[in-house]
Length: 208
Image (tube, rainbow, N blue to C red; front, side, top):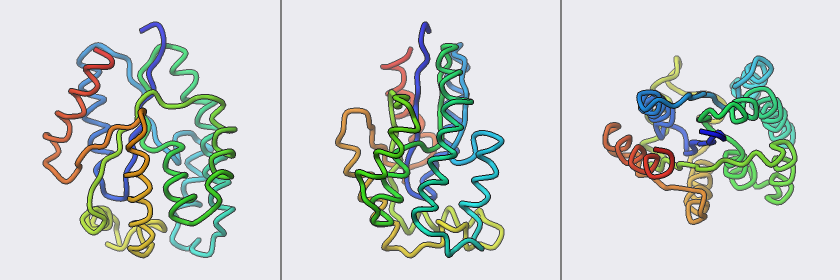
């Protein structure tokens, strides 16, 4: 590949992104492609410190403006340190969440000004938009049950503890995004192998 290819995965809590990303990475590497798997927040050393602040349940009083700026700080470092260099080397970059998470969670879920959130994030990504974004869709009750079951206290992190109405707004935002050209909506309530097969079929038409 002369140029890299940037893939992002989005979805509500418990939609199975981590599982599908790992399976896709293995599939693409078997096809001979060089793959960088990363995530937000927390894709860099600085980002991992920011992630702890963002997801710590003790920070329940975090102001929404503080939250969005911390995500933006994480993303700025992520793009400069990890994503752009990998793409310049011709790698396939797969990120667990990117700019669309902030549009869904903070702009729509939190009710912040959509255009302001978009402008902040458009600035920090410096034209580094994904080539393809998979939205893994699942019912919020099923997703939250999955996500919380993986936490030590069975309650979840700061975002997983949000009320159902918040997660409903986030899911609705993702479903509306899915109508745009860059996005592919995938039913994530099925068996993981069935979900992965659909993802591989789509990727094969774009990369292989």
